[in-house]
Length: 544
Image (cartoon, rainbow, N blue to C red):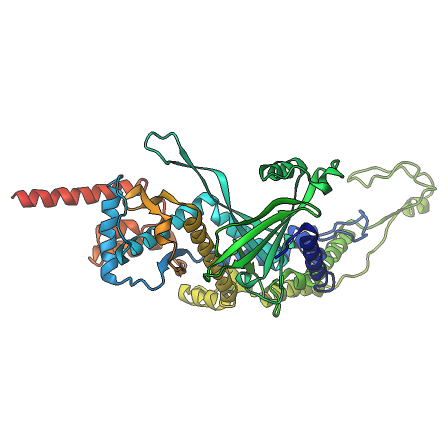
């Protein structure tokens, strides 16, 4: 394939034109409007003057934050498995003992051919390592940002890339002179800056190509180009006064004769190549897409905010009119006879006005204009519009916790029924997390080489030897395990666990592990001490 900056820029312009054709305003303008309404800038462009308060009752943000919180409410974890490798209950029970042995042997290394036990142990370790990586890259914060972007603009993209400068704390030699650098990093991209080759294919991995657009500082782009032997950039050299330049990163898949598929990449400006085509070694596009609502057969999602804006405008106008009417009744317009009142009238409480003339002149010196009657039903209409908008958006009284039902079981059932429609959004979100996890495994296998990966489990903090080449031929699957959100308060959870322990249903260790997080300081040390006491007790019994 003959790729040059002119061809790539033409593809970019075609993709921009397609986005501009979506909806009545186009994607770019509609997304800007949606962002303003979500953030609270809801009177922008309305010429209402400054003589009256412009009230904002931000129902768009309230609906969005509620739904985002509900999607993230259910705890989840990611587990990996190798397709075609059996993983029975018996094998899993052996893995725990093997992991404990490896954690206590810093010099351990896998040798010989891989077998099912080694593969299952490594898959189990990668499942734990996913949590370590998620904490390092701030995955919780990234998920929150992805949800917010998708709610406002309809779509959100998480981009995973390799950063050679990341310090791992590991060394390639025993003398610690050669540090191992490089690890994955993640970034949320605005959907306006991501362009798919075929917008009628809603699967990212089936796209013919993907273009990521970014504006980067000129000096930074020049340094990157020089790193790959390119000293002259035509469009930058002729407009060097500009502080930033448009950079297009084109990703596409190349199919090799042996059936392998790898992702290729090339970086250009409008007229120059920054980095020539290179093989990333990855098998998946490093982008994960989350859509709030599906838009027909298109890959781009639909935003709920777009259809809430008319209701938001009506609510703001009605509340503003209501407030203005109340102010007019409490502070009516004052009419002053300028012929009899010569001093400045401030309308401050207790101000004394000197009026010269007859009693008639005094009586007619100041007059208040009686405002028109304001229907009391108007306020009720406002409340009805707000409540109907919330209900139609799936945020009714039961979901918000405003229900007056006193029975806890009935309230929980009502909440579950009210949040049921959110399951569709939640399912798409978990599929998004699953895609991210598959991409992370792809990076680990492709870029890690031979290094140790950090483990944090009941054995403490230790490092597992990981030779990526040993597992390069595996088809690794990612599975999302979703837990039921806890409907109990922390005190109720403690009471329930205490009853189970007192009745002998659970052990001391099981009781402590399931207590609400943070309720017992240094819990891991306490569990270790309990285990150590049991071992010592068994040793004493053997001696007797």
